[in-house]
Image 1 (cartoon, rainbow, N blue to C red):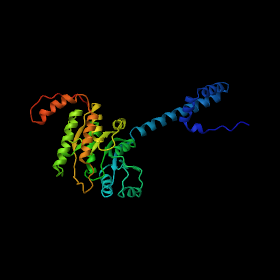
Image 2: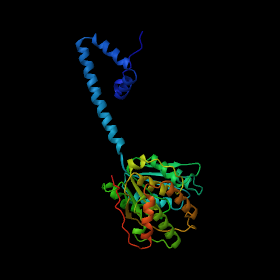
Image 3: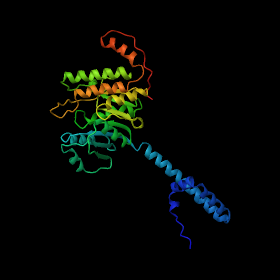
Image 4: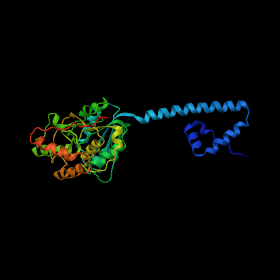
Length: 324
C-alpha cells in the first residue's frame, strides 16, 4: 500500500518553491499527471496553486518588511569591569531612549562582578547580553555588538558614565532626519569637565592627525558617542580589537567619501583611580591605525594643515565628499 500523502507542504509555500527549484523534474511529473485528470480536478489544482502563490507573495513581503528595518535604534554597550557604573547606564538608557530601543551589552570577560550581575539581570525582549570568556578589547566588543544589531541606526554607548545616554538622542537625530549617515558627538563643542591638559592635548593631536589622513573636519575623533546608518556600519568590515576601532571606522567611512557630521555631547571626565582604561600606549596604537586606514590625498592635506595649525591663512580646496 502506498504511504499516505503528506499535506504539510501545502501549509508551507516556501518549501514548495524550494522543492521546485531543487528538483525541476518533480514539477514536470506533476504537470504530466494533472494533464490526465478531469477538468474539475485541474480547476481545483489551479485554484490551490493560485492561493498558494498569493500566500507566498504575502509572506515574502511581510518577511522583507520585518527584516529590512525591524528597529529604529540599536545601542551597543561594550563593558569591561564596570560593575559600579553599568547599572546606572542601563537605567539612563531606559529613562532617556525610546522603549523600542534594542540594547546589546557585550561583556568582554569582566572580573569585577559585572558578569555575575548581568547573569541576574531580568530578561527582556529588546535587550541582549553577550558574555565572553576572554578579553579581546573594546573594538572587538563593539564589532560583535554591531553584528548582532538590527536597528536602522546603530549607536555606541560606553558603560563608564563619562557620557550620558540621554545625549544619544542628539547624536542620532541628523541620521534619523536623513542629513548624515554618520554622526559623532563632540566633547569639545559643548561644555565639559576635562581637567587634564594632557588628555585634551592628546585628543586634539589625534583628531588633527586623523583629519589630515582622512580628509574629515572633526573636532573629536576619539569620542565614544558615535552613530551610524545601520546598513552602512553592518557593511563595513572591521578588524581592530582595542581602541584602534575609533580611527579605523573614521578612515573606512572616509574611504567611502562620506562626510561625518558632529553635534555637541556632554562629557564627565573620570580619573584612572575611578577606572579609566585608555593610556598613552593606546595613543601610539591609534596613530598606527590612522596610517593604516589613511585615504588618498593625505600628503597635500598635510601640507595644508601645517600653515593652518600655525595660524597662517592658506587656500584650501573644497572637499568632494557627499553624505549619501
